[in-house]
Image (tube, rainbow, N blue to C red; front, top):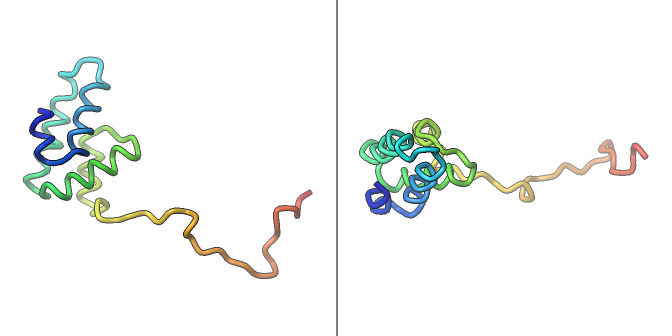
Length: 100
């Protein structure tokens, strides 16, 4: 199964490996992994690889999560880091020393 996942990409292989390793009995993760690998037929290898990468980052280890990412198109969305968010600076914003 890991060999099949490796043909899709390293993130897919990583997610399948983690799912099989984290289950008490690896057999419990087979159905989840097979479902994830079958998603490549519907969405393509590149999108599945991106969805698996997102799943690994957030710590999600399920077919439902990967499917949800693909259904909602979240595999193509890059979240902007917080430090690049615009800040508002005007007179009625209280500074850090206001309550002290």
